[in-house]
Image (cartoon, rainbow, N blue to C red; front, side, top):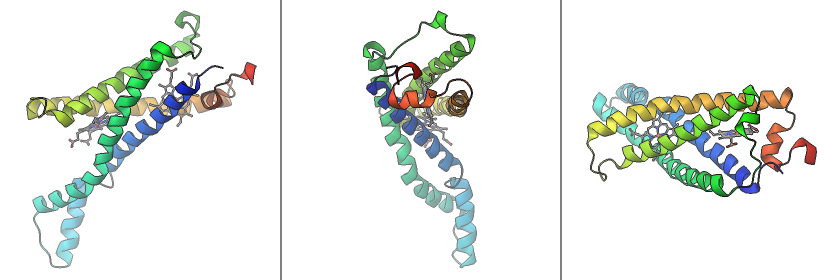
Amino acid sequence: MKYTVGFRIWHWLNAIVVLGLLGTVFLRKTFLSYKANAEILLSKLSEIGADITIDEAKTIAKVIRDGMWEWHIILGYALAFLILYRSYLFFTDRSKVESFSSLTPHKKAVKISYYVLYATLLFMAISGFFIYFYQELGFSKESADVIKDIHEAAFNIIMIFVVLHIAGVVFADIKEEHGIISTMINGKTKDNF
Ligand code: HEM
Ligand code: HEM
């Protein structure tokens, strides 16, 4: 057995939650962009003779977006729990861990990418909750804006990881590490099937 059940469940729940968070960002920046939708509201309403200002159109477009964006926060809580669960697994899980020095240069790079991802996820959760609760925590809007810019920049690290990771494991499974993906599903390596 390479990965315990607990570890595999963590991996797939984490994958769903992170992809979900990326999905909410995608919708916010495309179909539910308040700027684009305000323009649509403005032009379509004026066609039927109802004139509203651009600020009113933006207010409505933001209300439409808000129901979707709640999922960013709900999934944010899920991510926070998954980070705690992963930390618990770090100390207790019995999945096989190879020593770093025994790995090939390629595997070392892969492992480093996992550490970068873990650090970034931790940062996303802390900064995300900070932006969400800055008033309750007694911070100014300016400080929340600064953190929000870093939160948004760090989003790129997550996106790049997810694209490279999924392409990487699919490629590895096809080339020389046959079954690497099913190892994350059934926990077994090729030698103990
Ligand atoms: C949906 C398609 C995905 C597939 C098929 C997949 C598959 C895999 C496989 C096969 C491994 C083991 C690779 C190895 O031996 O190095 C792995 C590890 C890992 N995956 Fe994924 N993954 C997917 C999505 C994701 C997503 C969206 C995330 C979250 C950002 C993620 C995070 C991780 C992490 C952090 C590890 C390393 C775990 C550790 O050893 O500490 N995966 N994944
Ligand atoms: C993988 C993890 C995450 C990613 C990739 C991510 C990505 C992003 C991005 C790109 C934005 C900027 C959206 C924009 O203004 O266009 C954003 C905003 C935000 N995120 Fe996250 N986020 C993550 C986790 C979290 C978590 C855990 C929370 C905690 C609740 C959170 C709360 C927020 C809040 C409150 C905003 C500001 C929204 C606003 O200005 O109205 N995020 N996130």
